[in-house]
Structures are given as structure tokens and as C-alpha cells.
Length: 432
Image (tube, rainbow, N blue to C red; front, side, top):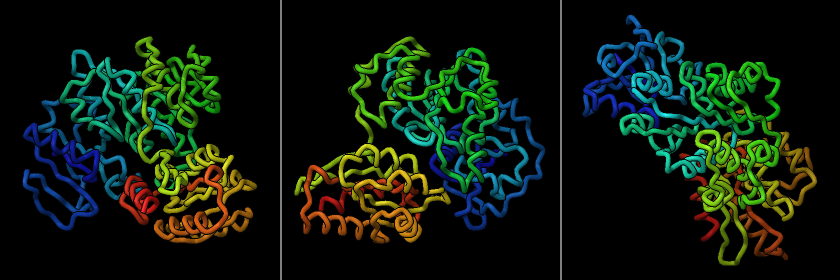
């Protein structure tokens, strides 16, 4: 019996894949009540009904043929280690490991690149895929094509945006290149501590072979896991430092920070794997939506959608980009218990005002008062946008020195279905 824990974005394609092989699965999810079946013959069960009383199949013996008879539980990466399903399961496996074992039986397994870090994973993954498209690269992991589809289509190069959650549940799988963007405090509630978060980010290095490579922040040079890494490591202090190490002419790259580092890592991955460095293709790359996305209203005022700025470090980088202007910053949401003081220390003394929304709005007000930053509690996004419009349109405001920035330093799920919805709604309010 194959059990699926959590029925979400990553596991739904996996269930379809297993069903296509004639395998019906038991799916456990907190949103299910009781027991029922879906139209494909899968059993849907409340998580509380799970009990693991079977005889586990050794995970390392997984093959496509053995899937008919194996006894494993495949977990959605969003389920935290403290969940009852994790605590009860005896033969638990993540999606990365699941396909890793199946791929070991291919005559020529695909190459893979894992890209992780606190901010910039999506952009770096998309850039890398663009640069290596001619080598058959496709994006997967958190974005792009599901792993099951990469497997079925025999994709020769997997570029995987890899979350700390996926890394936590990967104990066997390894990439050919692991690229780690700067790591800052995030997902503390899920991991339990920053140290545990960092441990998951670095865990893969301990399994990688001598013929693999890693691109890592310089501050991790002396970390015990980094020092034990058997492959070739590039430790970068800055974009300029990384470009120098990789032999890339940085003045030819037209992308600005915070995306410059993303682009240089993508170029580095391409050079490491195939010896190519297509700066022209990188310069033509368009940054995705909701990440420092600029637009103007009918009065020609500048608005910036950085809804994907869901943690302190991302918001600091967004503020840094516009620090020569007066910043009207929409801040707030579910901060997951993160320490926001580094953000307020960075903002202190700058020309800016805060419009607080979301579940931590009054926490933001208290910090603003402590650090001497103007703050208006708006609670909801529509009120915040209207407050910004009122401040802009009724006072003597200079368009060229004014920016309205949505960079919440928090997740969106307290008020929205996703950061994408939050960004779309922001633009809608700003332009009406």
C-alpha cells in the first residue's frame, strides 16, 4: 500500500502518476472527514485515522515494478515534522527521494540542479532553466513541472527550486550542483529554530559525491557540514566576488541587485555543468511577477508589487533599492514568529512611512514607535492603498521622489490565498 500524506500542489500530480500505473493510494489530509473514495478509486481519509501497522518495504529497494506491492508513506513537504502523520509513520519518504530511487534504474539518469536559500530561489531557477534550455532543462520542485512529469517525459536536466521543507524530507537524493542563496531567518515555526532551518539547508552537502559542485554563501565556509563537503565548493562574499571566482565579466551583465546575484549563480551553474556562459540570454531574461514589479497609476505615481517579499531579508533588499526616495511601505501579515527588529533597524532614519496590515499590524505599530518610524494601522490592503493615495494626492508630493511599496515581510495566508493573490489585489486597488 502506498499512502500519501497531504493532498496539495506537489502530491496531486504524484497521485495521478501512480494512478496511471494502475496503483490506487490512500490519501491522508487534515481537510478530509471520515473515509471516502474519489472517482479514481483512491481512498481519502482524515489524518487522525492513520495507523502504521504494516511491514515496511526497505525504501532503498524501490523500483517502478515494486510500487505495486511496496508499503511506504510519501509526504507532502508542507507537513511539519511535529504532525501526527510524521510521528506515527515508520516508512516515510519525501518526493525527492521517491523519484531518486526510481531514477537509479535508468541507464542514464538525468542531471539535476537544486537551488535553495531564503530569497531568490524562483528567479534563479527560472534564469538557470532559460540558460540551459538547449540542454533539455526544465524547472521543477516548488515551481514549473511536477517531478512525476519530469520523470515520465525523461527530462535530461532537472532544475529544482528546493525548499527547506523538501530538504528536510530528502535523506538519500542528491544533485549534481547545489546552489544556495543567502540564508536568513524564515519558517521558524515549521523548523523550530533557525539552527534547524540552516541544518536542513545544508543537509544535502553531506551526501554529495566528489564529482559534484556547490555554490554557497561565504559565511558558511567554516560550517562543519561545508568543511566536510567532498565536491568543489565556491563560497561567495558578494556578486562581484562570485563573478571573479567564476570568470564572469560582471560589467556585461545588465541585471541589477537584488537579482544580479541570482543571475550570476545561474551563469555559474551553466559554466560548471556545460562550460557555457550566455550573458546575452541572461540580459534578455524578464523578472517574474510580484518580485519588485514596478508600475504607474494614471497620475504617474510609482507603485511596486513585491508581494513575494515574505520575510525580513526580502523586504530589506526592496527598501534598499528605493532608499533614495520617500517610501510608503505596506507591511504585515503572518510573520510566522520571525524577529522583525533587523528590518526596523535597517529602516530607522530613512525617509519612509509604514502602512500596517494583517495579523501582526499592532506588533508593527509597537516596533514603529520604538524605532521612531511613522506608522498607520490599516489592517487590510484596500485601506492601506487608499491611505497612500490620500497622502499622495492631497499633499505636496513629488512624483519622482515617492514610491508606494508592497513588501510585507510576512506570509499572506492570514488574509489571502497566496502571495500572488495579494499582489494581484494590490495592483487592482492601486490602479482604480
